[in-house]
Image 1 (spheres, rainbow, N blue to C red):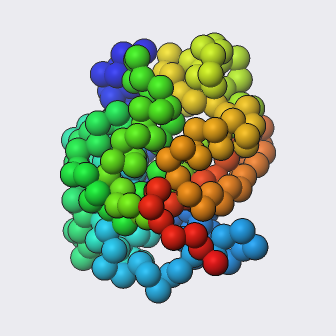
Image 2 (tube, rainbow, N blue to C red; image 1 turned 180 degrees about the vertical axis):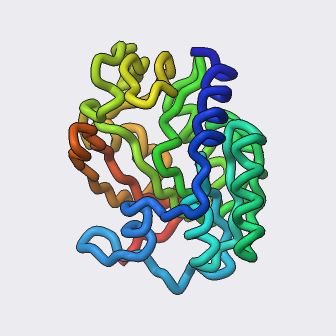
Length: 236
């Protein structure tokens, strides 16, 4: 699938499913507010810090980040996806700097963000790119020591069923239940070890988790990432 075809499909999907209210993704709430043996976020650190909501979709996590006191920016692949989210934010007295871009070319300056949140987004690949391309771009916009919070699908995630294996974890989707992503190339990690191989050259203080669900036959299985860009102090 060409990038412009994916743009059109997602624009149409969000246009047809625009809700009046949105609710944040559960694992993102847990990552930002929970306390776990391997991950204890500092919630007092959030107010006034900069965050990028990478691939924000209908804005469900954009609102959540505003509520936490962040200075929020966001990126999506078309202006037609950005506009309704900006309008909904404004109606609630919130605001975010929402721009059009792609994982390979995030439209913000170097070292712009204290945090990057990428909920089901950072693993979409444009033709000729690899997951390294996307991770390098995330590191570019993160400040040294900035926090990356994201998800990457496991190889048995629902939309990778029957996908073409392109090698190195890259897969071309063939059976998307929602009819939006067929033909799109994404990463699908076979193991946590494989994911670590991509992350460790770029990030310190890796805190990995997982999210496995069976939503009435839809298997949502993803690796969860919390990590600090190189140059960060090690968390206690």
